[in-house]
Length: 507
Ligand SMILES: [Zn+2]
Image 1 (cartoon, rainbow, N blue to C red):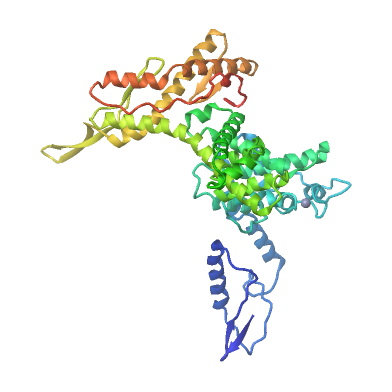
Image 2: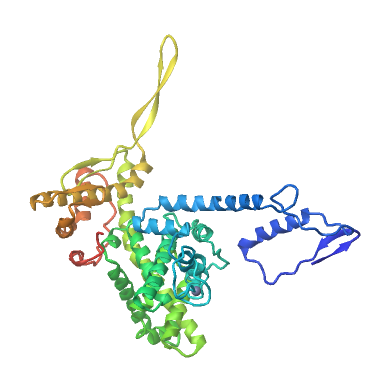
């Protein structure tokens, strides 16, 4: 540990392993802290109870410490973040119970004198079941939390205290994501662990970690599809999203397989993999794509799937093939998102063309409502009076070019959403249904929900069956005959009729 050098203690510490980047600062703090204490060669070590100024232990001071630890900040922070999330009440109630240790785990039942044949963890049967063990430390669940870390190529120890675990898990990754994806995933995963644990105890179902992860991803992934702000992603039910990715992966592989294996090593991989590629192989990568899965994360996922089915015996070959499959899947996903992006950037480009001639962007919604974007620059007017000079701010005739451009794509999409809601309202009234709505939430009486679901899907298809972008371009050309607009992005091949059958289109 160290030696006395000329009456001064010098620490000589050796470490069991190298530090992770995020630990370096902690180590520096630790070294500074142990260095700040003075160690004297002549005086003996004594035990000192810090919470009491006289250094002696008392139950009163211990009680105080425990109480402070109980009301600590991390719990408040975790709960504060959690209550702000837009998640179903069922999920927030569950997370509250989890963070406050209010779930009926076996240790909690024992504390309430409930007699059970066994109090040990139903998953591993090794330790008493507590919330910390069940969720974060059990051999069956621990690796479930490591897996998402691997998607983004991150390693490190996680706390087993629920509040700290939640903060650690979500904050480590919060820099890369703006819309609380990791918080959603944390809640979805813990909820899924709890459901599967209950399924095991009460319905005798097996606890399969992969199934737990799949369920968690499925629920948290649905949550993310809307904020992606991508017109055609929003239409596609989750299943056809995976289907679309799979179809694109196969297309790329077919192309590669025809190449000459002598000059192109991908040809070999493509030929070997083409019969192996199915929904299961690409599904996880598609679902994790919203978390910004890295190439390495995707490669590991695919490698594990391939290993499970013993598709390729040779380890080196397996690795190379996984690399190829991961690259192909990410390219396919990129293509899919590109389609949505190209529409958005086309809308922005058109707005820029209009605004740069100092005109406000205007259009007519499919229902015939004219819309004009009001964004104009402010100018100052000085008014001299006999007493003082007043400064007034008022709009000038100059449009704000940047604002006109950035605001147009979302405004246009909102105007389509508004049209959809109005069409649904009218149709519901005709069908004799009560209807209320705000932005994108539709309400009716519980007994009429199925009927409303049918109507809003029909109206959606009706609305988007029209050549919306073509009509927009035509109206731009009519309103601004002197301007040149960029060509329309290519139309996708999504079959709009699928919306009528889709479960998750609107839910
Ligand atoms: Zn266990």
